[in-house]
Amino acid sequence: MRRRYPPQSNIDGRFGPTERIDLNRNDVISQSANQAVVAVDLREYRSDGAVRHYVGTWDMVLTGDGWRMNDPDF
Image (tube, rainbow, N blue to C red; front, side, top):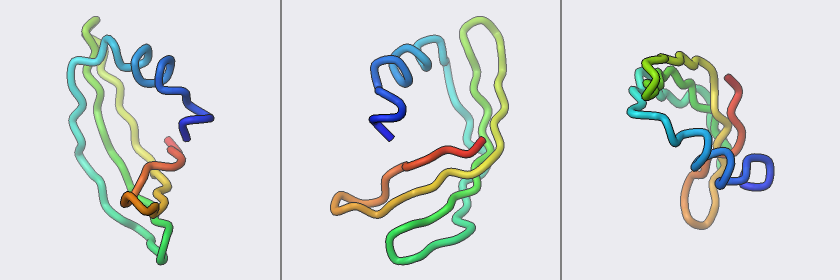
């Protein structure tokens, strides 16, 4: 994921104006030994007053350090 979404532009730049994120749903909908799919519903509140609503899934992978986000599908 870091290769597809470099932190400098996709986290620091993208979320700079974000004031808060409310997570309304995060339920595991399928899981194997080293992969899972999580249903996600969240709202992002930005400093310009905009509210963005995202609903979809997030693919997760199990690493030696625990579960890691792999691929968002919003």
